[in-house]
Image (tube, rainbow, N blue to C red; front, side, top):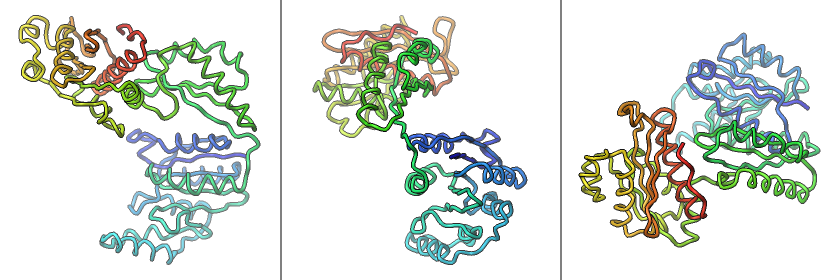
Length: 418
Protein backbone atom coordinates (compact mmCIF):
# COMPACT_ATOMS: atom_id res chain seq x y z
CA UNK A 1 0.00 0.00 0.00
CA UNK A 2 1.48 3.33 -1.10
CA UNK A 3 0.47 6.86 -0.12
CA UNK A 4 1.92 10.06 -1.50
CA UNK A 5 1.44 13.76 -0.94
CA UNK A 6 1.48 16.51 -3.55
CA UNK A 7 1.69 20.15 -2.46
CA UNK A 8 0.78 22.68 -5.14
CA UNK A 9 1.62 26.37 -5.43
CA UNK A 10 4.07 28.76 -7.06
CA UNK A 11 4.55 30.45 -3.69
CA UNK A 12 5.99 27.20 -2.32
CA UNK A 13 8.56 26.47 -5.02
CA UNK A 14 9.63 30.13 -5.08
CA UNK A 15 10.30 30.09 -1.32
CA UNK A 16 7.84 32.92 -0.61
CA UNK A 17 5.86 30.65 1.66
CA UNK A 18 6.86 27.73 3.83
CA UNK A 19 5.02 24.45 3.30
CA UNK A 20 3.31 23.21 6.46
CA UNK A 21 0.69 21.05 4.79
CA UNK A 22 2.94 18.16 3.75
CA UNK A 23 4.51 18.15 7.22
CA UNK A 24 1.09 17.98 8.88
CA UNK A 25 -0.41 15.45 6.45
CA UNK A 26 2.54 13.04 6.66
CA UNK A 27 2.58 13.21 10.47
CA UNK A 28 -1.18 12.70 10.61
CA UNK A 29 -1.02 9.68 8.30
CA UNK A 30 1.93 8.13 10.15
CA UNK A 31 0.15 8.47 13.50
CA UNK A 32 -2.50 6.12 12.09
CA UNK A 33 0.01 3.60 10.79
CA UNK A 34 -0.07 4.95 7.23
CA UNK A 35 3.41 5.61 5.89
CA UNK A 36 4.00 8.13 3.11
CA UNK A 37 6.22 6.92 0.26
CA UNK A 38 6.58 10.17 -1.71
CA UNK A 39 6.17 13.92 -1.23
CA UNK A 40 6.26 16.22 -4.26
CA UNK A 41 6.13 20.01 -4.39
CA UNK A 42 4.99 21.45 -7.71
CA UNK A 43 4.00 24.88 -9.04
CA UNK A 44 0.76 25.93 -10.73
CA UNK A 45 1.96 24.71 -14.10
CA UNK A 46 -0.20 22.53 -16.33
CA UNK A 47 2.49 20.33 -17.87
CA UNK A 48 4.39 19.70 -14.63
CA UNK A 49 1.36 19.12 -12.41
CA UNK A 50 -0.31 16.92 -15.04
CA UNK A 51 2.75 14.70 -15.21
CA UNK A 52 2.98 14.48 -11.41
CA UNK A 53 -0.71 13.56 -11.08
CA UNK A 54 -0.59 10.87 -13.77
CA UNK A 55 2.55 9.32 -12.28
CA UNK A 56 1.07 9.36 -8.78
CA UNK A 57 -2.16 7.69 -9.97
CA UNK A 58 -0.14 4.87 -11.56
CA UNK A 59 2.06 4.06 -8.57
CA UNK A 60 0.11 4.94 -5.39
CA UNK A 61 -3.10 3.74 -3.78
CA UNK A 62 -3.91 7.05 -2.10
CA UNK A 63 -2.82 10.57 -3.10
CA UNK A 64 -3.36 13.65 -0.95
CA UNK A 65 -2.94 16.92 -2.88
CA UNK A 66 -3.20 20.39 -1.35
CA UNK A 67 -3.45 23.88 -2.84
CA UNK A 68 -4.94 25.76 -5.77
CA UNK A 69 -8.66 25.24 -5.06
CA UNK A 70 -9.69 28.83 -4.33
CA UNK A 71 -11.84 31.21 -6.41
CA UNK A 72 -9.05 33.43 -7.78
CA UNK A 73 -7.51 33.27 -11.25
CA UNK A 74 -4.26 31.69 -10.05
CA UNK A 75 -6.11 28.77 -8.39
CA UNK A 76 -5.75 26.30 -11.25
CA UNK A 77 -5.71 22.85 -9.64
CA UNK A 78 -9.28 21.86 -10.54
CA UNK A 79 -8.82 22.83 -14.19
CA UNK A 80 -5.49 21.04 -14.44
CA UNK A 81 -6.95 17.89 -12.84
CA UNK A 82 -9.80 18.00 -15.34
CA UNK A 83 -7.44 18.11 -18.32
CA UNK A 84 -4.74 15.81 -16.94
CA UNK A 85 -7.17 13.01 -16.03
CA UNK A 86 -9.56 13.69 -18.93
CA UNK A 87 -12.48 14.60 -16.68
CA UNK A 88 -14.79 17.24 -18.11
CA UNK A 89 -15.77 19.97 -15.67
CA UNK A 90 -19.43 20.19 -14.64
CA UNK A 91 -21.33 22.72 -12.52
CA UNK A 92 -22.52 21.07 -9.32
CA UNK A 93 -25.73 22.98 -8.68
CA UNK A 94 -26.07 21.63 -5.13
CA UNK A 95 -22.65 22.97 -4.22
CA UNK A 96 -23.40 26.31 -5.89
CA UNK A 97 -26.68 26.68 -3.99
CA UNK A 98 -24.95 25.83 -0.74
CA UNK A 99 -22.27 28.49 -1.32
CA UNK A 100 -24.94 31.09 -2.06
CA UNK A 101 -26.93 30.15 1.05
CA UNK A 102 -23.83 30.48 3.22
CA UNK A 103 -23.03 33.91 1.82
CA UNK A 104 -26.59 35.05 2.46
CA UNK A 105 -26.62 33.63 5.98
CA UNK A 106 -23.41 35.49 6.80
CA UNK A 107 -24.72 38.73 5.32
CA UNK A 108 -22.08 38.75 2.57
CA UNK A 109 -22.58 39.86 -1.03
CA UNK A 110 -22.40 37.33 -3.83
CA UNK A 111 -19.32 37.47 -6.03
CA UNK A 112 -19.43 35.81 -9.48
CA UNK A 113 -15.90 34.43 -9.02
CA UNK A 114 -17.23 32.13 -6.29
CA UNK A 115 -19.06 30.06 -8.91
CA UNK A 116 -15.64 28.62 -9.76
CA UNK A 117 -15.77 26.61 -6.51
CA UNK A 118 -18.80 24.67 -7.78
CA UNK A 119 -17.17 23.50 -11.03
CA UNK A 120 -15.78 20.00 -10.46
CA UNK A 121 -14.17 17.26 -12.56
CA UNK A 122 -16.56 14.50 -13.60
CA UNK A 123 -16.77 11.82 -10.91
CA UNK A 124 -15.60 14.13 -8.11
CA UNK A 125 -17.22 13.95 -4.67
CA UNK A 126 -17.24 16.95 -2.38
CA UNK A 127 -15.51 16.09 0.90
CA UNK A 128 -17.58 18.39 3.10
CA UNK A 129 -20.92 18.92 1.32
CA UNK A 130 -22.49 20.77 4.27
CA UNK A 131 -19.43 22.84 5.10
CA UNK A 132 -17.88 25.99 3.68
CA UNK A 133 -14.54 24.54 2.56
CA UNK A 134 -13.63 23.42 -0.93
CA UNK A 135 -12.13 19.98 -1.39
CA UNK A 136 -13.05 16.85 -3.32
CA UNK A 137 -12.01 13.26 -3.99
CA UNK A 138 -12.09 11.15 -7.14
CA UNK A 139 -11.00 7.71 -8.30
CA UNK A 140 -8.51 7.16 -11.09
CA UNK A 141 -7.95 3.48 -11.93
CA UNK A 142 -7.01 1.77 -8.65
CA UNK A 143 -6.03 5.05 -6.98
CA UNK A 144 -8.05 7.42 -4.84
CA UNK A 145 -7.09 11.09 -4.94
CA UNK A 146 -8.02 13.71 -2.36
CA UNK A 147 -7.74 17.39 -3.28
CA UNK A 148 -7.63 19.74 -0.29
CA UNK A 149 -7.36 23.54 0.01
CA UNK A 150 -3.96 25.07 0.67
CA UNK A 151 -5.16 27.11 3.66
CA UNK A 152 -3.58 25.15 6.56
CA UNK A 153 -6.55 25.39 8.95
CA UNK A 154 -9.00 24.16 6.28
CA UNK A 155 -6.64 21.48 5.03
CA UNK A 156 -6.15 20.09 8.56
CA UNK A 157 -9.85 19.98 9.32
CA UNK A 158 -10.65 18.09 6.11
CA UNK A 159 -7.68 15.78 6.67
CA UNK A 160 -8.87 14.85 10.16
CA UNK A 161 -12.61 14.71 9.52
CA UNK A 162 -12.76 13.11 6.08
CA UNK A 163 -9.50 11.92 4.52
CA UNK A 164 -8.06 9.83 7.38
CA UNK A 165 -11.40 8.12 8.22
CA UNK A 166 -12.01 7.39 4.54
CA UNK A 167 -8.57 5.80 4.04
CA UNK A 168 -8.97 3.72 7.21
CA UNK A 169 -12.32 2.41 5.97
CA UNK A 170 -10.53 1.07 2.90
CA UNK A 171 -7.24 -0.04 4.46
CA UNK A 172 -6.47 -1.11 8.02
CA UNK A 173 -2.75 -1.21 8.95
CA UNK A 174 -1.54 -4.24 10.94
CA UNK A 175 0.39 -2.17 13.46
CA UNK A 176 -0.31 1.40 14.48
CA UNK A 177 2.70 3.42 15.67
CA UNK A 178 2.39 5.50 18.79
CA UNK A 179 4.40 8.67 19.25
CA UNK A 180 5.64 10.71 22.15
CA UNK A 181 7.59 13.96 22.05
CA UNK A 182 10.08 15.07 24.68
CA UNK A 183 11.04 18.74 24.60
CA UNK A 184 14.56 19.83 25.45
CA UNK A 185 15.98 23.30 26.04
CA UNK A 186 19.63 24.27 26.49
CA UNK A 187 21.29 21.49 24.47
CA UNK A 188 22.23 21.45 20.79
CA UNK A 189 20.80 18.95 18.31
CA UNK A 190 24.28 17.57 17.63
CA UNK A 191 24.90 16.99 21.35
CA UNK A 192 21.58 15.16 21.68
CA UNK A 193 22.30 12.96 18.65
CA UNK A 194 25.76 12.09 20.00
CA UNK A 195 24.32 11.23 23.40
CA UNK A 196 21.77 8.91 21.79
CA UNK A 197 24.30 7.03 19.66
CA UNK A 198 24.07 3.77 21.60
CA UNK A 199 20.49 4.08 22.80
CA UNK A 200 18.91 2.76 19.58
CA UNK A 201 20.84 -0.52 19.93
CA UNK A 202 19.63 -0.91 23.49
CA UNK A 203 15.96 -0.15 22.67
CA UNK A 204 15.50 -2.02 19.40
CA UNK A 205 11.71 -1.58 19.17
CA UNK A 206 11.97 2.18 19.59
CA UNK A 207 12.63 4.65 16.78
CA UNK A 208 14.13 8.00 17.83
CA UNK A 209 13.99 11.22 15.88
CA UNK A 210 15.50 14.64 16.59
CA UNK A 211 14.39 17.93 15.13
CA UNK A 212 14.91 21.58 16.05
CA UNK A 213 11.95 23.74 16.97
CA UNK A 214 13.78 26.96 17.85
CA UNK A 215 14.77 27.63 20.55
CA UNK A 216 14.00 24.07 21.65
CA UNK A 217 14.97 20.65 20.36
CA UNK A 218 12.32 17.94 20.21
CA UNK A 219 12.93 14.22 20.53
CA UNK A 220 10.32 11.92 19.02
CA UNK A 221 9.84 8.42 20.39
CA UNK A 222 7.97 6.04 18.08
CA UNK A 223 6.88 2.54 19.09
CA UNK A 224 4.94 0.21 16.82
CA UNK A 225 2.91 -2.75 18.03
CA UNK A 226 -0.50 -4.30 18.58
CA UNK A 227 -0.87 -4.31 22.36
CA UNK A 228 -1.25 -0.99 24.18
CA UNK A 229 0.25 -2.39 27.39
CA UNK A 230 3.47 -3.41 25.63
CA UNK A 231 3.68 -0.11 23.77
CA UNK A 232 3.22 1.89 26.98
CA UNK A 233 5.94 -0.16 28.67
CA UNK A 234 8.37 0.61 25.83
CA UNK A 235 7.45 4.30 25.93
CA UNK A 236 8.07 4.57 29.64
CA UNK A 237 11.36 2.68 29.38
CA UNK A 238 12.57 4.94 26.55
CA UNK A 239 11.48 8.13 28.30
CA UNK A 240 13.19 7.08 31.52
CA UNK A 241 16.44 6.44 29.63
CA UNK A 242 16.25 9.84 27.92
CA UNK A 243 15.57 11.69 31.16
CA UNK A 244 18.49 9.87 32.79
CA UNK A 245 20.76 10.98 29.93
CA UNK A 246 19.59 14.59 29.60
CA UNK A 247 18.38 15.35 33.12
CA UNK A 248 16.77 18.76 33.74
CA UNK A 249 17.22 19.81 30.11
CA UNK A 250 14.02 17.85 29.37
CA UNK A 251 11.22 20.21 30.38
CA UNK A 252 8.01 18.83 28.84
CA UNK A 253 6.38 16.13 26.77
CA UNK A 254 3.96 16.14 23.83
CA UNK A 255 1.96 19.38 23.50
CA UNK A 256 3.04 21.08 26.76
CA UNK A 257 4.86 24.38 26.41
CA UNK A 258 7.49 25.98 28.61
CA UNK A 259 4.99 28.59 29.81
CA UNK A 260 2.45 25.87 30.69
CA UNK A 261 5.06 23.93 32.67
CA UNK A 262 6.11 27.08 34.56
CA UNK A 263 2.48 28.00 35.23
CA UNK A 264 1.74 24.53 36.55
CA UNK A 265 4.69 24.67 38.95
CA UNK A 266 3.75 28.13 40.24
CA UNK A 267 0.15 27.03 40.77
CA UNK A 268 1.21 23.81 42.48
CA UNK A 269 3.46 25.71 44.89
CA UNK A 270 0.96 28.56 45.34
CA UNK A 271 3.58 31.13 44.34
CA UNK A 272 3.20 34.38 42.40
CA UNK A 273 5.42 35.93 39.73
CA UNK A 274 5.99 39.40 38.32
CA UNK A 275 8.14 40.22 35.30
CA UNK A 276 10.17 43.25 34.18
CA UNK A 277 11.06 43.15 30.48
CA UNK A 278 13.35 45.33 28.45
CA UNK A 279 14.69 43.62 25.29
CA UNK A 280 11.78 41.14 25.02
CA UNK A 281 9.18 43.92 24.94
CA UNK A 282 6.41 42.01 26.70
CA UNK A 283 6.98 38.58 25.11
CA UNK A 284 7.41 36.81 28.47
CA UNK A 285 4.16 38.30 29.77
CA UNK A 286 2.41 37.35 26.55
CA UNK A 287 3.56 33.74 26.85
CA UNK A 288 2.54 33.49 30.49
CA UNK A 289 -0.92 34.96 29.89
CA UNK A 290 -1.55 32.65 26.92
CA UNK A 291 -2.24 29.95 29.52
CA UNK A 292 -5.78 29.85 30.88
CA UNK A 293 -5.85 30.47 34.64
CA UNK A 294 -2.55 32.38 34.67
CA UNK A 295 -4.11 35.11 36.83
CA UNK A 296 -3.67 32.73 39.76
CA UNK A 297 0.10 33.14 39.66
CA UNK A 298 1.04 35.97 37.26
CA UNK A 299 0.49 39.28 39.03
CA UNK A 300 1.89 41.77 36.54
CA UNK A 301 4.40 42.44 33.82
CA UNK A 302 6.05 45.77 33.05
CA UNK A 303 7.89 46.77 29.86
CA UNK A 304 10.73 49.08 30.88
CA UNK A 305 12.42 49.74 27.58
CA UNK A 306 14.05 53.08 28.32
CA UNK A 307 16.57 53.88 31.02
CA UNK A 308 14.10 56.39 32.50
CA UNK A 309 11.38 53.78 32.85
CA UNK A 310 13.73 51.43 34.68
CA UNK A 311 14.50 54.19 37.16
CA UNK A 312 10.98 55.64 37.57
CA UNK A 313 8.97 52.39 37.61
CA UNK A 314 11.33 49.81 39.11
CA UNK A 315 13.54 52.01 41.25
CA UNK A 316 16.75 51.06 39.45
CA UNK A 317 19.36 53.56 40.59
CA UNK A 318 20.51 56.05 37.98
CA UNK A 319 24.10 55.64 39.15
CA UNK A 320 23.85 51.90 38.41
CA UNK A 321 22.89 52.60 34.81
CA UNK A 322 25.50 55.37 34.50
CA UNK A 323 28.26 53.13 35.82
CA UNK A 324 27.40 49.76 34.28
CA UNK A 325 24.83 50.43 31.55
CA UNK A 326 21.22 49.38 31.12
CA UNK A 327 22.42 46.03 29.80
CA UNK A 328 24.37 44.77 32.76
CA UNK A 329 24.36 42.30 35.62
CA UNK A 330 23.92 45.08 38.16
CA UNK A 331 20.91 46.60 36.36
CA UNK A 332 19.07 43.31 35.81
CA UNK A 333 19.43 42.43 39.49
CA UNK A 334 17.87 45.74 40.52
CA UNK A 335 15.12 45.23 37.92
CA UNK A 336 14.24 41.81 39.35
CA UNK A 337 14.26 43.11 42.92
CA UNK A 338 12.29 46.21 41.91
CA UNK A 339 9.45 44.43 40.14
CA UNK A 340 9.15 41.90 42.97
CA UNK A 341 8.94 44.75 45.49
CA UNK A 342 6.32 46.85 43.68
CA UNK A 343 4.20 43.82 42.76
CA UNK A 344 4.54 42.14 46.19
CA UNK A 345 5.06 38.75 44.55
CA UNK A 346 7.04 35.69 45.60
CA UNK A 347 9.29 35.91 42.55
CA UNK A 348 10.57 38.78 40.42
CA UNK A 349 11.96 37.96 36.96
CA UNK A 350 13.83 40.47 34.76
CA UNK A 351 15.57 40.56 31.38
CA UNK A 352 17.65 43.20 29.63
CA UNK A 353 19.79 42.86 26.52
CA UNK A 354 20.72 43.87 22.98
CA UNK A 355 18.45 42.16 20.45
CA UNK A 356 19.98 43.91 17.44
CA UNK A 357 20.68 44.43 14.70
CA UNK A 358 21.88 47.79 16.10
CA UNK A 359 23.19 48.66 19.55
CA UNK A 360 26.00 46.16 19.93
CA UNK A 361 29.50 47.08 21.05
CA UNK A 362 32.79 45.23 21.29
CA UNK A 363 32.20 44.55 24.99
CA UNK A 364 28.48 43.83 24.57
CA UNK A 365 27.77 42.52 21.07
CA UNK A 366 24.29 41.89 19.66
CA UNK A 367 22.78 38.93 21.48
CA UNK A 368 24.16 39.93 24.88
CA UNK A 369 21.41 39.26 27.42
CA UNK A 370 21.21 39.40 31.22
CA UNK A 371 18.60 37.53 33.24
CA UNK A 372 17.77 38.21 36.89
CA UNK A 373 15.57 36.33 39.38
CA UNK A 374 14.71 37.59 42.85
CA UNK A 375 13.17 35.04 45.22
CA UNK A 376 13.35 33.93 48.86
CA UNK A 377 15.55 36.87 49.86
CA UNK A 378 18.16 36.06 47.19
CA UNK A 379 18.84 37.44 43.75
CA UNK A 380 20.40 35.39 40.94
CA UNK A 381 21.72 36.77 37.66
CA UNK A 382 23.78 35.67 34.68
CA UNK A 383 24.91 36.81 31.25
CA UNK A 384 24.24 35.02 27.94
CA UNK A 385 25.33 35.50 24.35
CA UNK A 386 22.43 34.33 22.19
CA UNK A 387 22.81 33.83 18.42
CA UNK A 388 20.42 34.81 15.65
CA UNK A 389 18.46 37.81 14.43
CA UNK A 390 16.32 40.13 16.54
CA UNK A 391 13.29 37.81 16.69
CA UNK A 392 15.43 34.81 17.64
CA UNK A 393 17.23 36.69 20.39
CA UNK A 394 13.93 37.86 21.85
CA UNK A 395 12.33 34.41 21.69
CA UNK A 396 15.40 32.69 23.11
CA UNK A 397 15.60 35.22 25.94
CA UNK A 398 11.97 34.63 26.87
CA UNK A 399 12.53 30.87 26.85
CA UNK A 400 15.68 31.13 28.95
CA UNK A 401 13.98 33.39 31.50
CA UNK A 402 10.99 31.07 31.87
CA UNK A 403 13.36 28.12 32.16
CA UNK A 404 15.10 29.87 35.06
CA UNK A 405 11.79 29.91 36.93
CA UNK A 406 11.20 26.23 36.11
CA UNK A 407 14.68 25.25 37.23
CA UNK A 408 14.47 27.21 40.48
CA UNK A 409 11.10 25.70 41.41
CA UNK A 410 12.41 22.19 40.65
CA UNK A 411 15.67 22.72 42.50
CA UNK A 412 17.81 22.42 39.35
CA UNK A 413 20.93 24.51 38.68
CA UNK A 414 20.51 27.29 36.14
CA UNK A 415 21.93 26.78 32.66
CA UNK A 416 25.58 27.94 32.59
CA UNK A 417 26.25 31.04 30.49
CA UNK A 418 26.23 30.20 26.77
